[in-house]
Length: 239
Image (tube, rainbow, N blue to C red; front, side, top):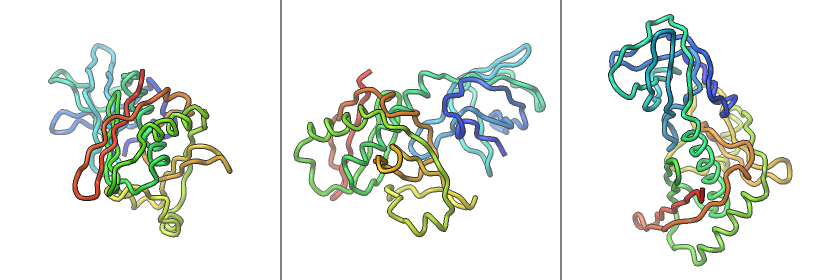
């Protein structure tokens, strides 16, 4: 099992760790990770792992068996031995862009309150697919509403509920294609806003900014028809 440090602090840029395994493919498994593994439409993190006398660039991060996290080297090179103490160094600019896009997509699901059928995140843009038979009549109004929520600088926090509590509140799940992971007995929720000012609350395992103002202005791109009732809405960071 790898301790997911990113879950408690998405702003960690570096941290020590110990190598606990090397996979047959040459991936590095650490006892604790600041690197988020590919999941839920969010790409795996990249960066670098260094140790006395060596270092290697990390191209991406993926999930392994059980609760392990595997760092995938960018190219074949000498790897640290099992038991070696290493330092993790995050590609922070890339990660922070992912965080901004991810939180903005949660807000997009607020201004377009329809079931979500898919989504993905990249450095400067993201998209959500909606169960949307008809295209929006006023895309500019949606964009203005989205930037209005961002401009309120709402806090973004997380909390945990039991699987039974989620079953009793199925409306928390907005995504039709991806269900929250089960088996651990509890589900992580991400809340945007607080108390009566909460604008969104849904299961999510990804990384987010601490406040919506950190996203900056966004613009809505093209809206594509994908199937009989699905439409894909693109969102772009302005800077």
